[in-house]
Length: 339
Ligand code: NAD
Ligand code: DAU
Image (cartoon, rainbow, N blue to C red; front, side, top):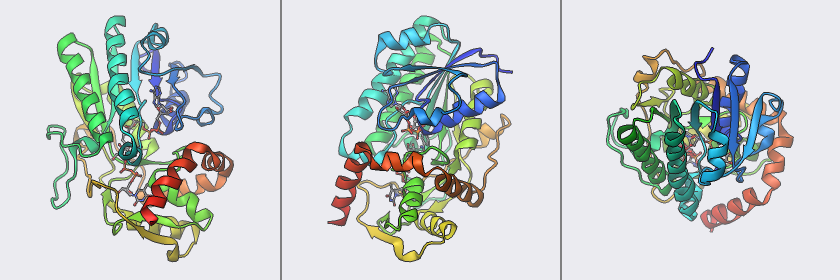
């Protein structure tokens, strides 16, 4: 049983947030959850189907002080997933990234300070460390930040605010820096769900550059579990890397998807690279492991299970892919890369 009786989960209607909420509802029936979410293009109430009686849902923007304060009152912990999360979109328009990821985090922190919240966990990313290409280094929590995309820069700025609130005001803060995550309910703009859903429809799998950028792919269940362990056991004022200790290229992702769906390699299409593309992320998750966390999923099993989930949940992703937010990004971003 958790020592936190009522937890505000911002961004709980998104991909990792909804996996986290589902996990907590299953393992800790006594913990009350307030999901606070603006339902941007990436937020989807259907991600929380079946949990309606277990959670309180508040629609609101994390940058809106009044609504945040109303929803946070009575909670003893906050887990902040809410963010603009897609790197490609941050290259088209960085403003919403600054507004939500920086200003929104500030509003949450300041409200948590005023309300005397016992614990504030901020969900960050391994992208704050920047590109490790050409080295065999694994990022340590003590490494300096070298963010290279507007998304990564906004997440780095948010982390600085989190630690500043810990130091200046004694807020009980802790941070997780997760690696690339995949699994059920991921918006099909990120590589794995995009490639699975394209392959189902015999559409091209657009690989940036030579498809040799490396990511450490971690299943959403492992990420959610790591966040909950750090919430309960992480030392105040510290950050914890979460990663699967795997290094997988874009080509290997494409190949894995095609093998699972029994589709031909001819669907792979090499397209012009993402500007400022980071070619290698890899974290050392030893500190989180020392708290008792370990990843359960291999990439092979996780990818196979994820392909099955998308095959079994076509209604969920087809509705999204028909929607305006998916179509407008896809049309402009990929048309530009094909021109
Ligand atoms: P997502 O885009 O799927 O979901 C984001 C959620 O936040 C959505 O439900 C959206 O409606 C909500 N949201 C956005 N702006 C908001 C605002 N202003 N106010 C309230 N709610 C708002 O994101 P995700 O992939 O689930 O990522 C969750 C968190 O984990 C983010 O902080 C991201 O930076 C971090 N992260 C993601 C990954 C990954 O691979 N997806 C890896 C490491 C860290
Ligand atoms: O590392 C953690 C980060 O992982 C999170 O903080 C971000 O929120 C999350 O979106 C993710 O960022 P990436 O940019 O690494 O994820 P994405 O799925 O967009 O890209 C993964 C890799 O695949 C990257 O090398 C770019 C490549 N790619 C991506 C897309 C969408 C392609 O080759 N083709 C594509 O169409």
